[in-house]
Length: 436
Ligand SMILES: *Cc1c(COP(=O)(O)O)cnc(C)c1O
Image (tube, rainbow, N blue to C red; front, top):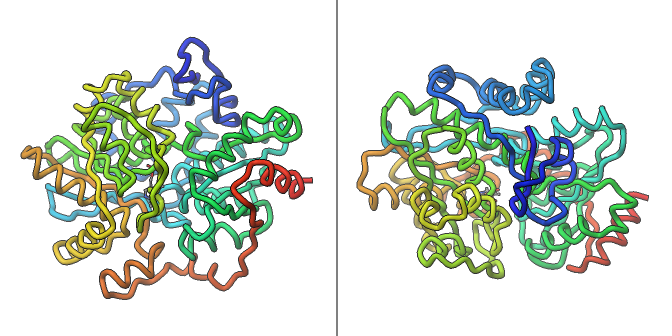
């Protein structure tokens, strides 16, 4: 397996290069090559397998030349001690794929834990301390912090927008301590992401520290996210209908992971890209013109991204061809009032408690299924557990929501963060200070 840059498919790099230096020097995004083809036989064999088992099978097809079978098996089972079940809304018609049974209660556990397992495996071979920088709009940071906590040889610095993440999200970022350091930035998620991007191209900083990213720009976050699309397909294949996935999207990593396994042969009939008021991709689908914008704050804050870093990847997967993109993906977006109303309707109709992101995914799915008039089976990705947005969900649905115990214990721990302005030099100075 090799990786090329979307800016120059001619030059390829190794697994370790793409893993530890998330971004190519030409500022494109890494893509795997060649993508193995998973045939009909493979899909027949996977019904009933867990995420870890399917992850192991696909990992062998991807990295069987670089990593031994035994190591891959150990690594995937360590990364995925939880599963990603499909839960029916209307049997044979629509379902949710619950991706929140991991430690931080959001789908980002899947990518972060697989990447952490792979990094700790590869760093044993190289023996140098790795500094991971990650910008988060909420959920990435928690998943990365928990995935890397106490992993030897790795330090993690997390940048998050002050006042724009939920209390519980903030607790996950700021209470673990040890090798995890939180930077609270006076600015938006886009500001945090810009600081991280600048750090990676800062020659002076890179000469001092071995920097690595855990953002969704790292292709190793995306690859394992493909596993649960395959797992879900295995569960609904019996209905013999075209399968549509609806993915609540912000940075567009999750949906790009789906497009990647589609390219590997997973028979996905269509994708719904469901967003909040940050709807540059739905706009692209209507107009053919892609115009990144500043992000707008919404109640589905993990999707408050105005300039999605994986748009380039998704477009690339469809050959940078607008018509092909449009044939495979439909866009829907909802404002906060519509999201609240959708959460209520989903609760009334299916007795299902959805977080605001998941609700947007389900609404997009329903609107697409109604519009397309085809007899498909639709699967909406449930990206976070409702208790991650407990105050909001409780007010909207007028019910009480329990936080699973493994997270509830964090709320008693003191917050520890370094407060900085949205300024690269300020970040650099305090980063060098903390790692020195
Ligand atoms: C990160 C996140 C999203 C958006 O996923 P992308 O891969 O950035 O498109 C959606 N919902 C939740 C709960 C998230 O944490």
